[in-house]
Image (cartoon, rainbow, N blue to C red; front, side, top):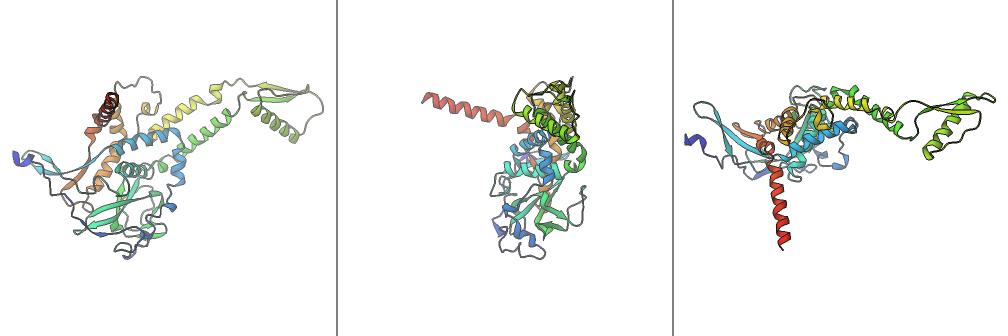
Length: 370
């Protein structure tokens, strides 16, 4: 039926903003009751991502998993639609996007903003956008991100979040919850889920670093003659021997001291097997297929880049993408009956890379002809 298939082109276009709130300046929003924290929004010199998040990012596998999923979120476009009953099922009808959909924060591109919204969801289980402008009908038209590490919620202690908070504290002052869009991940933030696993991975990296600092295998210094050395003298001897090993391939000993190397091989000194196991643990924590992080999994394999993109989307990214799209579809952001979703089909088909390849080929052809 034609009436159900036509594209709606005007219903979702935003009116021009009537009220704007530049973070940190006097306006309707920053002067509202219990909204003192808005004065600190946009003061980027004080923004932090949090020490727990930064420690987790120092684990290579977590960093790789985060970057893989963030690259997917950041490369996909957002689109709007509504749903109409066609007699058999609900049919999606595309809508013209609101003006903010391609630039959620006017100061940065969506590829940047969406990646860091995902980052907060990934590590903390929630993320926040502050509304900086609204239309005459009170719907948002511009937003800015608030780092989740800097937000406290007095009515929820976490690490599991049950609903949008009504008592939000930012930089020590309260924010009006009506001006904050709260994204709640269906997956608990990883810095709360496996603190011991992350700590183990960090300790393992420290041990590997210590073992890699010397080209000579570990060993034992043994006194074979002469006057017995005290505990302090033995410690000083070992320290001076280690210092010599770090700067020279040859160390000197007298006839009363011998050095016996251990039988530890270089791969055991670098804890290769332990590192491989810990990398597997981190892929489990991050919910990505191990092979995407370069971890060997034996018989499991994939045959094409299309299948790897599908695995990354299905097992890793989709829950976060649905969280972002679903939150932006709620009635405090869009009118009832209008929805937002990611253009995942374009990503899964690899159309982004093919378009870039065609553009590069055409550019090279023009340069060569000229």
